[in-house]
Image 1 (cartoon, helix red, strand yellow):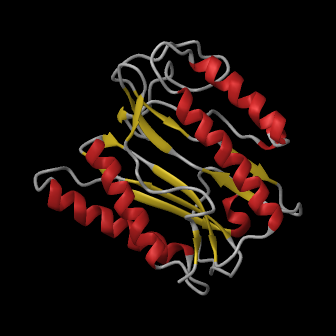
Image 2 (cartoon, rainbow, N blue to C red; image 1 turned 180 degrees about the vertical axis):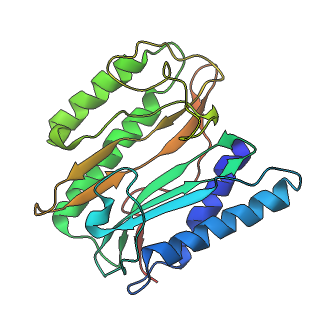
Length: 237
């Protein structure tokens, strides 16, 4: 799983190299996918190579968590959603980031910073002895204070390991309001808050950060290292 997270980071690094106005979502996604698959082959020469993919959306195409990529060309000022998903013999990992092309307007920056603040708090809350529902309750309160709770989408995270979106995952380890599972040492879970501002409103688009954590004795280790937030991900190539 840790190697999968490392490879997800490599996919993101490759994608960033190709972000500039005029490039298409699909072509950029292909670059990230190919980089990850080559690294999987190098690291695990005898592995099964299947289901590694990239979702990469731009502009209003970011308004859903798992929208399909298209041939839309990037424009200066676009919001971007980067999603890298390496699969190594059934072990599934993921990295997801919000980025902007060249610059970010004030309303988009405000929404982005709000989601990043919730994400950072969520990372702090992942530790043994905490209920999934308790994490959701605190993060919902924070979103409400920031004025973005009405734009929040789905849960805050879920289990990772021998699974995929095709083959299912642990229903009992979801960061949702109705899940009272208590986090334990050695569980692997994501933190992935998302808000979606509807088309036509200032700052329209989807904002999402996604990291994977391994729960330790007294906290958690974030195994996805690619940086997040406006100070890192306004891309000027």
